[in-house]
Image (cartoon, rainbow, N blue to C red; front, side, top):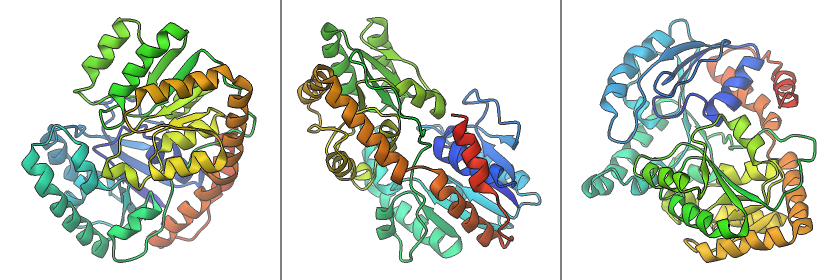
Length: 376
């Protein structure tokens, strides 16, 4: 099967797109053409794929990327049996002649508009209804894959769900040490960047370092750069997912201080599952899915939204009881390995795409993905 995968919004090394979905397809023996912003993200394409470079759509700078998208997709679709797009923007740039098409719904786009400070207020009010219209049209014209069960409510039909799981090492990760906390993921105001910097400042006198691993929104970068220059924290910028998660191991806490905004209320923050997979106790705000997971499994601490004092006390509590923190990490790892291990759903994901493309199911995806997993 020949598959064209397209994004102008996401980083080419996006964990869901590249390291789970594309990797599963490659391991199953399928050919991949990947339309993505390699140059703008300073990424060398995987030698196993055919890469087509496009500009990246970020903030208000989207016109150039949108203009290039349709031409790039036409090139990528030469001989393709299936097209997978990962951005709602690409739904407006699809070539008329194309094979079976899949939209992978990563988020509640209409709800996410509220958390985009670069948009004028009038657009934040009017765009959600336009987005819902685009979604309804897409549902009538193509296949959908959803990243969360809760996204079913936005659509009239029922669509397969491919959750944001991760690769979970079978080995028990190193127990938490008491001198470091970590955040892995994109950094923005809505994701708690301001609180992370303040928490890092308050942890310094206790000898606890804060590592922030991820790209940042433009308006947040000066805050992070200033904090790094002052020695308050270490901000590493974007790091490929598999390397970022290795960096997380041994931290006394994995931080998820997301705000109470609509786009996060119905989602499980991927970073929570990733911390669990690496045996790191979780400190999370009380978003429903995250709080339910942490409290049910007993793998971390839930703190109020925007409460840096509570986050500080949670981290110090873990630091002062490293045996308890290690037990939390162990419980989180066991839960992740049992219920959130990507190879357990990779075969079903590939089989579904083969069915939609009208190709016979011949994949050896489980063997290939497990080989990749053992290499982690």
